[in-house]
Amino acid sequence: MKAQKITLKEKVGYGFGDMASSMFWKIFGMYALFFYTDVFGITAAAAGTMFLVARVWDSFFDIFVGIMADRTKTRWGRYRPYLLWFAIPFSVMGIMTFFVPDFAATGKLIYAYVTYSLMMIVYSLINVPYASLLGVMSSKPQERNILSSYRMSFAFIGSFITFMLLQPLVDIFSNIFDTQTTDQLQKIIGSANESTISTSPIGWTLSVASIGILCTILFIFCFKWTRERVQPVNEEKDISIKHDLKNLLNNAPWWILVATGLAALLFNAVRDGVAIYYFRDYVQFHYKMPYTGWDMTTIYFLIGQAANLIGVIFAPMLSARYGKKKTYMIAMAIAGILSTIFFFIPNNLEWILLLQVVISLCAGYVLPLLWSMFADIVDYQELKTNRRASGLIFSSSSMSQKLGWAVGAALTGWILSIFKYNPDVAMQSADTIFGERFMISLLPAICCLLAFIGMSIYPLSEKKVQEVTEELNKRREEAEHHNLK
Image 1 (cartoon, rainbow, N blue to C red):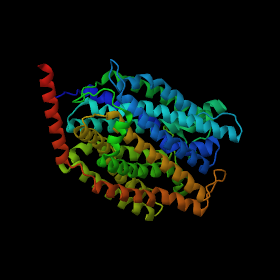
Image 2: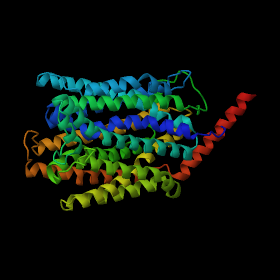
Image 3: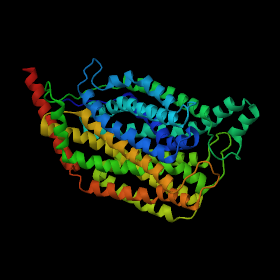
Image 4: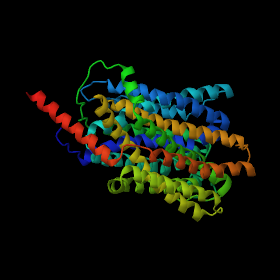
């Protein structure tokens, strides 16, 4: 197979896709639990259970989407069309999810289950094919590392934009539509007296709508600027779903990587989901930055995303020098040690922000490596089975991502409930605050340990991946030569 040249425009276009996905995903990961408990009006335990039920079911729906995408054939390719077809539904469902209907308690809970579940389904229908693009844009592992780094860089830029915009937009829209008072609008923008995000429902709905419009535009550009190039060596017809699933379940490296990714994503989900409670109830540093409206939770998130982005940028360089596996293990070990230290530090803002920078830097190294390693598994399975099931395998990576966030969000809600979190009181109990501190430090440290152990037994070394690539390229050249005869 001839070498493909991936242009800067195409790399940026590919990055736009995860930029859009991440803008919504961060809203769900960082703010959804707070929205459901303090704005929508359901208990933390009910919200946690809903996250688990909706996301676990949807995680397995990802496998169906991957199988369907592998069998899709259009003039645009197998995976790109989904970016176009679901760009608008993606944003519409986000708006409906963050709308608060005037229903009784039971009706609200049903509405939350339905809209949240539909949002996760639409997310799968656009994000699984998007992830699968990485396996067909280039056959070169190093090129895929670069594409993966672009993807994660733009994902963190998207997250950064969400954190910059969401809280100020919620406050501003809430103020405009709740009071129509210009003086209070100025207070929201410039005052340091208001230290927490607004709980006005209209503010949340309009803010998510604003971000959703931007997401739709980014998905359309991703569709227009990317191309599918890599074709299977032997395009077999009428391959059964059972056959593809059997191949996947017999793939030992896939099992290990799914489990390892699940632990790493659980680490992120728990830390992110409890942060807004941790700052409001434990840190209690009452501040809003003038002219931006950012409180300390938002500043904490922004600092973390900036450190994540630096990690993503340097991940290809470090993995090229030390290997993906070793880089991943070192990053998880450091993050785990520092997360443990996080529990024992005093309530000191400087220490909290310093540890946030270094822990987030380590997390930034890990995420692009995960996606790149799933592309390696696509090659490994094709070599073993003569079947290139990119959609199915990348859907499994999305499945592990959603399971990690599902279990993380559910644990956060359940632990808050166990430690007697009450959204209707101004001051939480000492037990509740202890639970919040545990979830932002020791529980993520346990997840890092599990991820480290999983990666230590992962069998696809750099040498093995290179051997697989060379053998597949040899087969493609032979197939191309045969077709020319």
